[in-house]
Length: 605
Image (tube, rainbow, N blue to C red; front, side, top):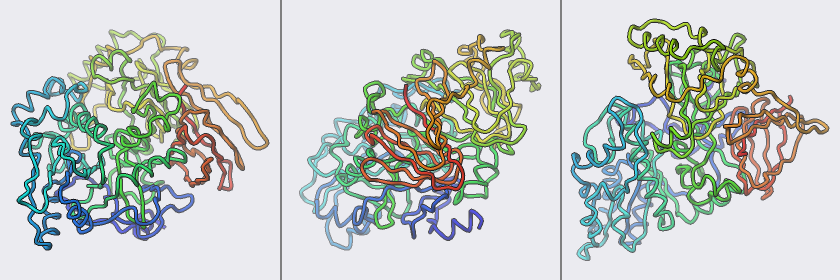
C-alpha cells in the first residue's frame, strides 16, 4: 500500500482554498474518520484524547454559546481570518433575530507608517534575515486609550469585541481565544492572504517571517501568557470555513494530564534546496507530489502545536500554552533555569538522494544574546538515523587552516561565483547509522548528501551563518543568503586537526547493562547543556525521570509502548519524537517489534 493510498483510507482531507494558503502540505482534517494511530506507522496527526463531548464543531455551536453569554471578547493570534469568522458567526446569529454590535480591534491599530517606525529598531537591515527580539508590548501597536475605552452598547442584544488584542478592552466578559498553527500562518503569508500585524501589504516571505519571529510572535505570546487564566473558550482557526472549539477548563485539564504521561507535537514538513527523499519514502500520509523534503519540524516547539481529540474532532493549540501553564511539570528541576522556554529541539534534515547543506556555523552565546536578543544559543548535534553507504559530514577545520585564506576564498566565491574546494579547509568524516557528531556554537559544519540526520539541539533554530552554499539557488530560483561576516565573528578555529575526532565525534560508552538491555552514553560537548543516552533492548525496561524532562525517539526498531506511572500508555513508531515530562516520574518502555529496539533520550545536564 502506498502512502497516498493509506492517506485516502484514513483521512478525509479538508479541501483547501488555494488562494488562502500556499503550501503543498495537507491541511489537518477537522475530524478523523477513524483511528489513525496504526501500530508501527508514523502518525502525522498525533492527538491526545480528551473523552467525549469536549471539542465542539462549527460556527453554529459557537454562535449558540455566544448568544447565551450576551457579551464576549474574541481574541486570537495573528493570521486568523477575522472577516471570515465574523461573517460566519453573523450568519448564524442572523437567524435568531438578535441585534449584534461588533467592535473590531483592527480599527484601533495605529497607522501603518507609525507601526513601521515603532518596530523598525527590531528588524535589522532590510537584506538581513535576522532582527532582534523586540521589547515592546502588544498594546504599543494600537491606539490603546481608544481601544480600552470601548464599552458594550446596551442598545444591542449581543456585544462582541473581535480581533487580535481584543482582550485589551478588558471587559468583564468571557474570552474566546482563536489560535493558529505557525505553519498555517506562514502558508497564509506566502499566499498573500494575511500580512504582519498592522501592515496592509504583502512583502517578501523572508521579511514577513523576520517581522513575525522578532516582533509579532514575541508580542502575541506575551499577550497569550498574560490572558491565559482569563480565557474561557479555546478555538482552532486553521480551517478557512470551519472551526473546532472547547472550554478552556477542559483544555487546561488536558494539559495537566499530558504532563504526567507522554507528549508528541504535530510535526510538519518543508522542501528545501538540498532536500532529499527519505521523508517522502518513509513517512506516510504526507503529500508525495513535492520535489523533496528537507526538514521535518519534529519538535521545534516555537512552531509546533499539540493536538487534542474528542469524538474524532481535532483541535490544535500552540506548544506555548503548555509551557505557560505547566513549565514546572514539564521541565522539573530545570524549570527555574529555562522558565517557559522549552530548551531542546529535535528535527530531521533529509539529504538522502539530496545535496549538501551549506557550510555554516552558529553564534556564540554572548553574540546571540547581544545581537539577536535570544537567551540560549544554537548548540547542535547530528545523530545519523539513516544514511547511504558513501554519506559524510563536514565538521571542524583542517590542521593547517589559515583563517584569512579561507575567508578570501569564500568572498571570492561570493563575488565571482567560483567553486570552493571545501575539503582544503574543512574536514569530511564518513557517517554511519547511530553516529553522533557534536556541533557546539562556533563550529564549522555541514551535513553531507546521503544522510537522514536527527538534529538534537538547543531550541534556537534560525541562526545559521552560511559561508558557502555550493553555488546553488533555492527552490524559487534565488540565491540563498550568505553570512560571512557573522560567521567569522563566531568561528572557533581551534577546532581543527585531531581535536575534531577527539572532541566533536561522540565516543559511545556503556553505562549499565541488564539481561537484554544496555544503557549507552553518547557524550556531548562541554558547551552543550544537554546530554544523550541510547537504550538498546529486546523486551522492556523501566526508567526514572529523576525530575528531569526526557526527549526521545525510537531510532531503530518497529514500535514501542510507553507506560507512565499514572497508568497512561501510548504506542510510538519508528522515527516519532516524543517527550516524557519530568512529572511523569517513571515509565516503562516495551518493545513491540521483532528486532532489537534502540531509543534515543536527550535530557538536560
